[in-house]
Amino acid sequence: MASCNEDALVKRSLVNPTDKATGRAPAQSSAGAVAGYPPLVRSIEPWDPPVDVGPDGQLLTTPHYRLYSTLEDGWLSEKIPAFLETALLHYRSAITDLPAPGEPLETYVLGERRQWQAFTRMILPGESGLYLSLGKGGYTTEGLAVLYDIGRWDTLCITAH
Image (cartoon, rainbow, N blue to C red):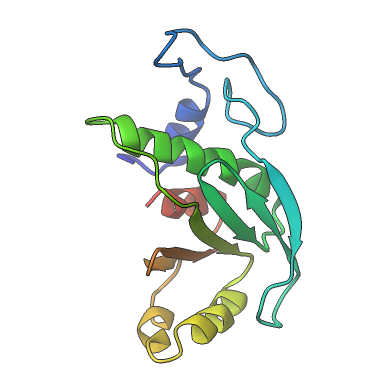
């Protein structure tokens, strides 16, 4: 994304997209989808994080993501699935058409840093020191994105990367 500020994100979320095949805007939808997109969350299941820090969470499944979340910010929880799908659509079509991922992209958005730290120590026991020294946000490794809530706009920006 060229810009990660609140105004730019709001403006982009208000644009009604068009279907490339038909050239028409899709029907309006509900369920927290970005304006004009059909509901993107296919399922929501309880998720008990493998680290005993912080609240339990949810596993949200979208067409291209398995989003594990312990977010307590309802607004952010509602927006991230559509935001991820919209960002992926942009990455796949901005310069040239690219294929969809063959497998769902695994993304963890944890509600707080201490839960992120414990999760990082668990999945990267030999390398966690490097990642734990990051100032804020998260990382992607071995096909996993592991992030934590750093505020609404900053969290959306980091999920886009």
